[in-house]
Image (cartoon, rainbow, N blue to C red; front, top):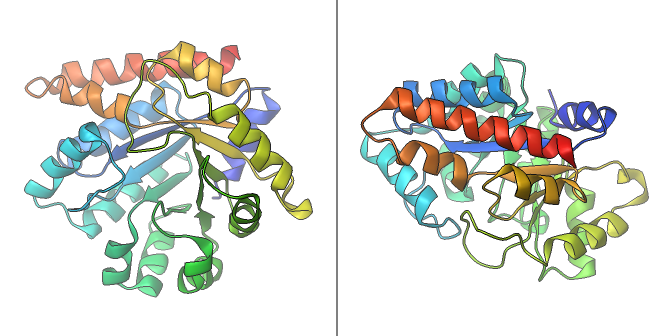
Length: 270
């Protein structure tokens, strides 16, 4: 199921979609599945499952800490796919977010086939651009998977047009220059980036949703971003909710649920 289904549903309800991220295997594989299901139950429209990687150059300290815990517990790509399968079974579109090296090592064609078999909707590739991705684009198209590439404030108009033309599902607008992480204020770069991206989408892709990731950590920030974007992407704040309760899993899930409900209410307020 393409993530566009979730965006269409949100659009019909005159709101933005809430996209939630956690790395697989955090705090462990079973615990991560429980956490992601809690996020679905509390209002996430789309789930991003992170593939922990040893060199996460674009991730901030919060996501790095969670990914490192998962790696130390021995999480593998097969565990990530198992997590996707469990979450996709809820009926919520589920994608993997990963650096490209693990996919290349696993085998691009094999990865696409296994992701599709697990019920995954597609892949977000933060360090892979469409002009460097012919093998992935071909494999994704063969298995009917979404191809979600990134645009940034520094992207030229030409690159935004090229990127949106290659996307399926949504385009990920990363509106913070630098590594990921929750922030106390939203970026002034986000609105203009969304406007540029919307204007530069190809004619045939005028309905391509634009999701924004910029460190949203509460419902008020979610409402602000939802006023101009099709989707609000949240990662570090969800990870922090679990990191803050390392020895009490029930308390971590309770905090995660409360945060999701606040964010879900925020996207509906806008």
